[in-house]
Length: 300
Image (cartoon, rainbow, N blue to C red; front, top):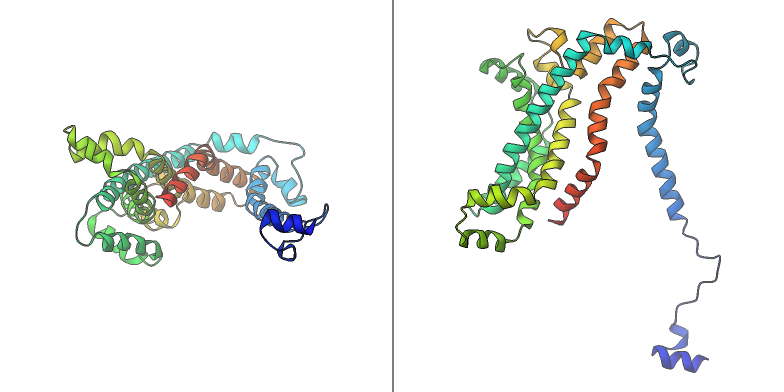
């Protein structure tokens, strides 16, 4: 048996790896990974689930048993919030900010990424590095000079004063995601389009944009969710302006509502849940596109 094994494998029998017997060699790493994943998911989802379920309870029930389940279930909190004009004004303000920021990020980001990815010029790598360094520049550092600049430009207290800085702070992530997408498109496609008489702008509109659509969807969703949940920038720009509280975005509206109705905890939880639902639903619907876009950016 030893001789036969040595002849067929070309290796001495002593050098062959030991055979695994049935029932041995259990990989304990996989259960540990799943356990850690479940713990992380519980920590992330637990507070959201508590807020959502708390909206179906009364304030008296929350005070009596904070960790209990709704018994009985009530829709009065949700009905009172949905029937409030202030809530819908906050929703309208958040929609304006989110849509304006998303449109600006996608349009400006794809044009800047196209130049960096497809044009060869001096300082191109330095420009890309500059955008990358923008990830390390937090909004809190720029709070004071940004506020002074917006006052000088007459944008303080307006929606544009939030949309334009939001676009600027979202561009580094947008460029990092889109540039690999555009670089991965073969040069042969551009050469063939040029032979057919298509200009670079025509190549950009007809070929490059459709091929980079997964990346555009990814940066668009990230920009929308980031703007919808943004708190610090609207706090600095809008809350100190002349806009009435009915036209503040939802993050500020939640703060103002919780302050005004601090004794009605259940209504505050219902308001918070309704403020989270649009961004959460939008993110879940586009989850696969986000993952696909990020994978494409890494491969590129």
